[in-house]
Length: 231
Image (tube, rainbow, N blue to C red; front, side, top):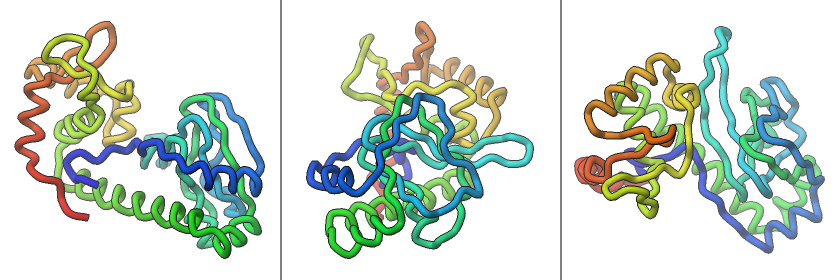
């Protein structure tokens, strides 16, 4: 994972053999978009797997300020750390789209850990990715300004295969200013001010409420960022 281009949105991964195995050992749950299905203090007796849809996982302080830790696409587990440590979760979990989850109880998880190499590998891989993302976020929040964090978020979300106009890249993910504040650890008013500054600087533009990043500015940023850091 690159410090310069790390994204809070984990990519979709698919393993047909693992999904069939999980389907046999789990309970399928379907939630609509924007449904909060786990809050801090919830028990640790289940591990969840995302079959379809997308979920976000975040913290909230006493004043109601939220900070997104990551968003997960199909193929990822969550609540695995709380289950393994037998400790209540400290996160809010919410669906971003209509979502299908496989819920595995503790007994099923222990059986799969004993018998399935694919399950063990995916569980460990997921934990390692989250640890790297946490390290990235600590560095980002410690050493970079809010404006730099917005630029990094936009750069990590650029879809280089989608150019609606010559010289402008679309984004893979659409964020509101509130959502961007949740991600970078700031507030909506500050995000709106900094987005206007980035527009004035030619780094981005907003067309029909769609944010686009200037292709030349993108290439310059990537060039200055240099090679990816080693894990």
